[in-house]
Length: 560
Image (cartoon, rainbow, N blue to C red; front, top):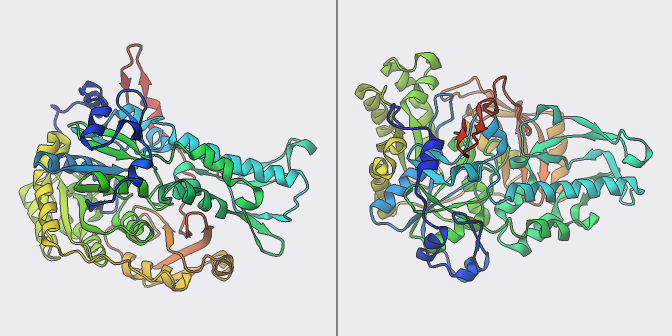
């Protein structure tokens, strides 16, 4: 990711691109007309019947990264650019990434469609309303909320304890005012007065369910299993008790179909579902991944945030549930980010500091070791900036070589696929080496406490775990709800291996604080909340929304 004045803004590059009709891309993949539903000229949904007619045959590669910093790493950009590079090398390759959330688009992070000359397009559509999947998820989620409150209003025949309702409402925006609210203040006909909360749509259980569902039948069964709360004697009340799953499935019947778009270089890109990697499982949908594997020889997919979150959940939740067999992984890093992990402030990153790079490289080294624990071979992709010196680059190579892993410079932001050929060749070498022996980290049948402690110690470097009283109660209660033998979805800060975002690098010996453990019965896992992690983000003092506008000629400014 070099930074030169020659490269226009992401939105300028995207709007200047000459796109291929998506129908042509679909035809090259071997898709029939009746398997495609066009959303205009450049977007389409692929019907699930296309997957039912084909068997996955491709090889799966995960793109993950170090713990993110304000210096930037470029994981999505690398995923797009290396896929473009593989196609330049004559490989039938596609990428599978998540749909962006409006919250980060208008907040701090910006879009999630790649960057520079390694983007998926139409960029502005993908970053905004796209094909309406997020809106469908919000409607299905909030329908269940409405049915729940209507049930309470009309006599509460299920004897729900309003103090033990666990089902929130959802919206796709960063809005801290909705973290904890009171509803039902409009009098006798407005429903019962009770505490309520909102989660952002990427943290909705409906998002997790749709990302993990194998088809419409599985989707409806998962929706039926959702636990909305407990009765006074602590029995679960599910969406099926409210007779909600049929209507919810109807609202999601189109959204579950994967979305097909293209890279800037005209290759296929499947973009579907968008669970966050810090509060959810952080992976695109199972059906999109399997469809890509059925149509292409090599498929790159990314998982949210650093490998301690996204990669761990990709392996332990998505791959386990979907029986996927990843064969290689790319860990993305930058010299600038490693300097920050080594203690350098953001305003001093342009100054050469080999010692700081070496200190910060402890972060990438731990991520390398962690990915290897799953039996998956690794290459490091180092996004290059103009300020990087040869000595700093060599320091990264030396640190990674100590883990037995190679480093390839990546310049896809500036050069597109051509800038990722080195990484692409390294990925192919890993695939050809046949050294992958994928295995999850833990046995899902073990007690919840033990699974959380395994993740904390083996992946995060913690000395132990402290469970708050609410978490201790959940450890007793969840097995009785049928959730004792599921994977664990950890929710914690993305900025550190620990639950403290200020602890950069590779901290160890700390105690991970787990404040609560929530049921996610439809998704098929439990969610452990660590530290101060929030399921509803807030906007900063100067959100990105302040700089975004659309001009009369349709040109968009500020979207990145």
